[in-house]
Structure formats: structure tokens, C-alpha cells
Image 1 (cartoon, rainbow, N blue to C red):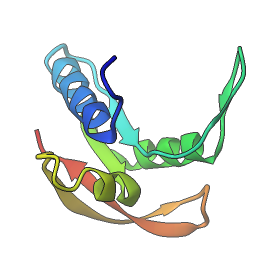
Image 2 (image 1 turned 90 degrees about the vertical axis):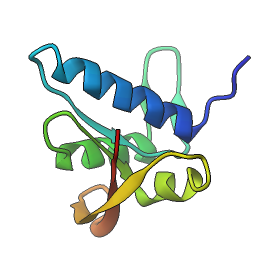
Image 3 (image 1 turned 180 degrees about the vertical axis):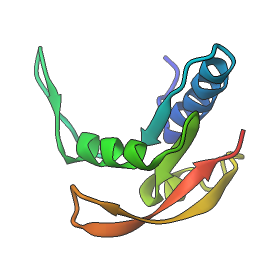
Image 4 (image 1 turned 90 degrees about the horizontal axis):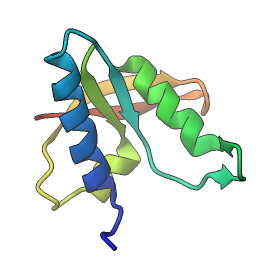
Length: 102
């Protein structure tokens, strides 16, 4: 089994954004990592809410990640650049977000 990591999620998100951009459609992708609650029919939790907040700040066909993901992918070869501080309504605070560079 291949390990699931934030760097792999980020690579997948960048590939999806690139593919969607070439199709005439648009997407906005936000990535965060954290604990979630899952049952047979629902996923819920603060981590999902934060990811949705992050996606809400992305531009068309852009992948934004939280500072948590930025810290976790350090040394993985993934290229991120600071995008700025954005308000995350889930947390009631501004967080530094990072843009994935394809």
C-alpha cells in the first residue's frame, strides 16, 4: 500500500487543476490536513471546514494550501509560494496560505 501524504495530495491536486484548466472548466482547490470524523455516510470536522475555507480563497484553477500543509511538505520537493494572509471563518482568524507552483 502506498502511503498517503500531504505531498501526494498536493501533487494530485495540481494535476487535477492542470487537467481541468485545459478542458474549459474551472476548479478551486484548498488543502488542509487534520483529524476528521467519519461514519458510513458522512465526513465532518474542523479540518474539512478549514479546507473549504482555503478553497474559497483560491482563484480559478489554483491550488492553495494551509500553513499546516506547507510545514508538512518541507523537504519533499513540492514548490509552494506565500500567497498572503486570509481570513478563515472556521477559525475566526487570518492564516498564511500558500500557492502550489506546477
